[in-house]
Length: 265
Image 1 (cartoon, rainbow, N blue to C red):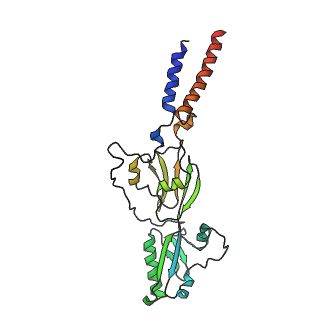
Image 2 (cartoon, rainbow, N blue to C red):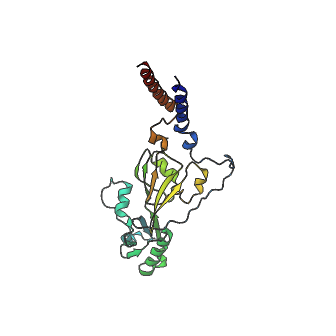
Image 3 (tube, one colour):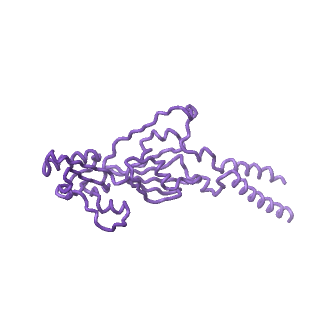
C-alpha cells in the first residue's frame, strides 16, 4: 500500500498539467492593464498590398460608349454554370513570372510590386494616350480577384480558400475554415508569406488582444497559415479536466490491480 501516495501525487500532477485551460482556448484576451469595456487603440489601416507573381487581377474598363471599350473587357464565354472562381480564372489577368499581365491591345503591362491603385492609373493613362480622348470619360476598375490563402494543421477545415474581399483578417480566415479545435495552439499561429525576395515565416498569438495590432493580423494573397497542435494532444491526455480525470482513474485502477496481483503472489 505504500505505493498509493506516490501514485496519487503522480496522477494529480498529470491532471494539473495535461488538461487544456480556458486561457488556451480563448481568443484575443485583454491583458491585466486593459479593461474589457475600455476603448482600445487598434491598427485599422494596413500598408497597401503590392502585387506578386501569380496574383490574379480583375480589370474592367467602362466609358460613355460601352461598345468602344468592349475589346478590353473579357467576354465571359464558357460554361454559364461556372462558379465565380472559375470565371475569374478564365477572365482575370494573372501576373506572370516576369511580373507582367497581358491586356488586349496594350500588350505586356508590368505590374510587379505595384498596388492595384497604381495599376489602375497606369492602365488609364495608357488608354487615354493611345485609344481614347478625355471626352470618352473612361472608368477603369482594378481589383484583386479575391484573397486566396491556404490553411493547414490543427484546423477543422484545412485546405485552400478564397474570400472575395479587399481586406481579410486572420480571424475571418480561420472562421471561414471551420475554426481551430480545442487541441489547436492559438498562441503561436504561423504565417508563411510571399515577398519579392522569397518567403518569410511570421508568428502571431491569437490568445492576446494585441494581436489585432500585429502587421500579420490581416492576411495577404497566397498566405500559408499553419496551426500546430497543443502538447496535450501529443501526449494523448483528455482535452477537459473531466476527460483527464477519467483517463487517470483508468490508469490508477490498472496500476492498483497490477500491484495487488504482484503482492498476492
